[in-house]
Image (cartoon, rainbow, N blue to C red):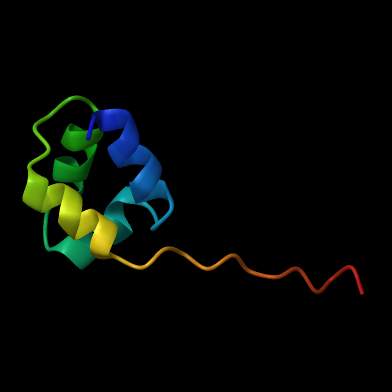
Length: 62
């Protein structure tokens, strides 16, 4: 688990602010983790336990 992996997984789950709210931490904490701050095993597992965003279907092409 490194900052790049954390960021990839976070982006699959939403914005820094949205993920921070779901995890009960400050947005700055998410930013710190993505920029080289400590990522504990618990923090990694908590992030990965969040559901991934659903891709919206574009029906405008019909």
